[in-house]
Length: 161
Image (tube, rainbow, N blue to C red; front, side):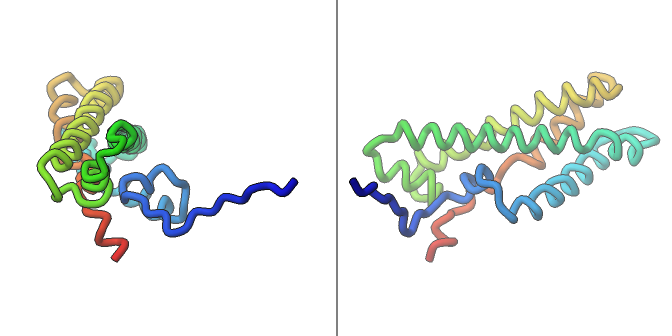
């Protein structure tokens, strides 16, 4: 008996889904994310020894950012699965969040959700690292606002033209 072969042709992924797939893109994303996180953390701190603090703790903040990005993309993926036969909604979330207001609001919610995870995680990391509660909240808020995954809003349709 001959086995049935399955092939996928022209599979299109939303940009935010590509972070789930290990690729050479990660060789760029990880260092770029680390540099951005280090820069934001450095300028959000009110310490004398900011450089030493950043050198020791930026990698933890960077990992939290990746976790938050994965959680936000997992939320978007879940909405896609639940959208069922609603092709317009799925297409809007996946390829053009500016297509309609519902798609836009869902993607913005995913960004806010990720930013909230960044804030909570970074606040905990920074408090454990020795910052007082006020400074930890301040830096975590800067990190959440400036490093949220705004790339979720990028219309992936531009990649496939």
